[in-house]
Structure formats: structure tokens, C-alpha cells
Length: 330
Image 1: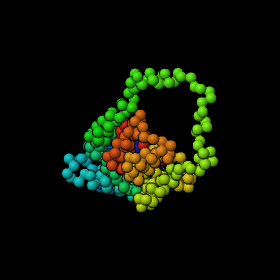
Image 2: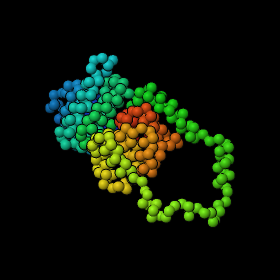
Image 3: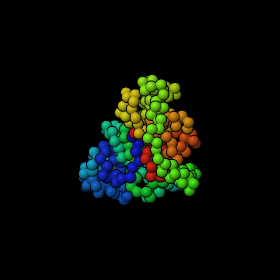
Image 4: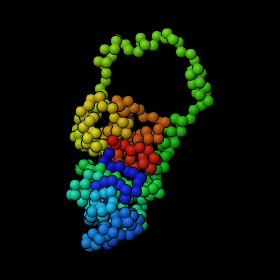
């Protein structure tokens, strides 16, 4: 999965590079900056002294020293001053500069904190959107795995209205699916207690026209439907798997094996990447052996975005993470 949102301590991440939300001096500070310097050891500060600071929106790179990461990319995010002083552009630049520096040094895996969302005061929901949008755009053009590392739940939030709308959508469907009338419960108990007839004529009717003929009538597989839909929409394979937040190697497996059975998050991710309407998305899930279920918050959240024609997989994953669900991709 090229972009993953994870809860972790960034100083323990075993990646090629971790990104440090630094100040312009690059000489250490509080929060993530201080934690990274403590974990890396005094050698990091010594090298940082040779860099002569860093401007807001830019990035510089050092060795990782005692960290599991090979490199530390130091970037300076903007201080929030109300949003009218170019804060968003500077925050986008901080992410983009860091990603380009990682690419130039051959990094295949990079871990970011949520830049500027701590003492610099950038509103967390807006900081999250900038991070996801900027990283997502970069990954559409480059093969890299990027982790957005959230230390705890308090450091993570999506927009209040979006959260409320999704919560209401879940309530309208999830509660209904889990509410069973006493009459329905009674009927199920009666049916489950009924004896089964030993010689019921079930097997003979199960496969009409003989087994060989039934097998020949098998419908197209998930892989076949996926490739057909990609062609119908005039997309390239790369455009599709990148929009689906799918690794290139996994897509190659699906493409080369007509009988490949993807996981449910992978199947849903392709339905989103292809921007399928709800009925076609359901059909694609069925090809993989799954269905949308109102007994699953995960399914309802994805259904909400498809129903509202929002096919940005990174925004969907923001919402899934906020509701403690698995993320789309593979």
C-alpha cells in the first residue's frame, strides 16, 4: 500500500528515511524534533550544525545515526497565523521538498509526522488534508511507500462536518442491520430447530445440466473484470493501481493470474479507482466473493463515499482511520 496512515512512534520506524518536523535552526526543539534528536544521539546535532539552518517550506537531509532509519529529512513547516499568510503553500512545499529529497537519495520507504500540527498550531484536520493530498499526488507519479505516522488519537482528526455526516450515515444503516425484532429472532430459532430430511432432493437440483456444463458457464473472474474496466475507462494499468493505492507488485500478481482472489480492501480499492457507481462496485466485489454489508462499518463508510461520488482513495482512508477501520489498498 503506497500511502499508509499508522499509529506508531516515528523514531522506531524501520524505513529508509524519517521526516523531522524541525525549526529553522535545525538544532533541535520539542515534540517530534526533540524525540528524533534524543533517539539519534548527539551525532545528529553535530551534523545539523553544518547545515546552517533551513528555510520554511524547504528540507535538508542527514544520516540517521542511532535511528533504525538510514536518513533523517529535516523540514520546516509554517507557523499557523490564521491561514492568510501562505501557510498552506508552505506546508505543501515542506512535504513536496521532503519527498523529492527522499527520491533523490534512493529512498523507497519514508515516514512523515503530521507537520506543523503541534506547537506551530496548524489546525489538525487541515494539516491532515494537506499531507494526504500532497503525498497522494506525488505517489501518482512515483513508486514509493509513505507512512503518515500518528502518535496518538488526539493528534488525528478529520473535518468535523465530514465526521458527523459519516457517523449519521453509519447510524442510519449500521443500527438497522444490527437491530433484530423479537419476531425475527423467534422465526430463526424455529427454523434452526426444525429437523432436516435425510433424503431431501437437494443435490440433484444443485447443478443443472451437469457439472461439466456448469463449469463451462462460469462468469468472468475478478481479474478479467478489472482489466476490462480499465480498458473501458481508457486508463493505463499504472494509473489504475496508483489511484487504488495498490503496490505495483500486487497488481502484477492480479494481472497474471486470472483466478486471483483479492482481499476485500483491495477489491474495494479498485472499484474506487475506477470510479464505479454503486451497482457496478457491488458487482466487482461479487467477482471477488464479497458484498457490501450494512453489518460492517468499513463497508458503510466506503459506500458513503461512492454514493457521494467522492473517489479520492486517500480521503476515504482518512475517514476509515478516524473510525478505526482497515484502509483501502493492498
